[in-house]
Length: 197
Image 1: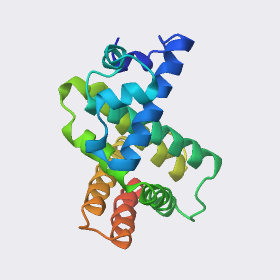
Image 2: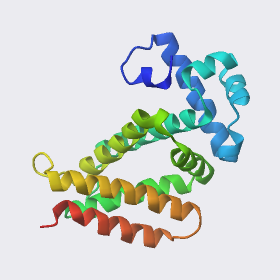
Image 3: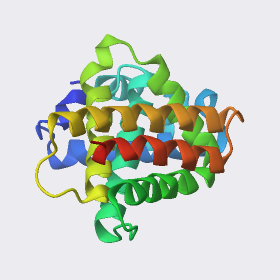
């Protein structure tokens, strides 16, 4: 079993609950101590699963933390759905939603750092999981933008640029190279591509 089995819905209820415990334990460890604090043996102990079982679900710490980021993005997507941004135009709404995500990450900077480092370390063995994270970012942007109709080819490209910008500005902010004001400005600039031309 690998972490990709989750996407196809093949987990039994018991396996799904075990996976949730693993992700909760990983999130708590990362929130307390960042990337280095997430040690597989400690995750297994906190989640009350055997170490071998943990490795069957998540072959590495990077797999595990990318899955944590997926869960965080699912939560953010639900928040945007329940409380849509109120800006007057798509670019403003997208910048508002993604800035709100930054505010949430400000409350858990060590968790944010752990997730971003994991994404940075992800290799080809995680391509489907990274694609899913990118897809969720695009889904959040689309939900916030409330564009009329399906996105055009240009808007699909804009979604990718916004996703790249969001991850790059998150990394810059975590490293102390960008203020929240600069992050907001960069996101707004990228979001305007959705309605350019």
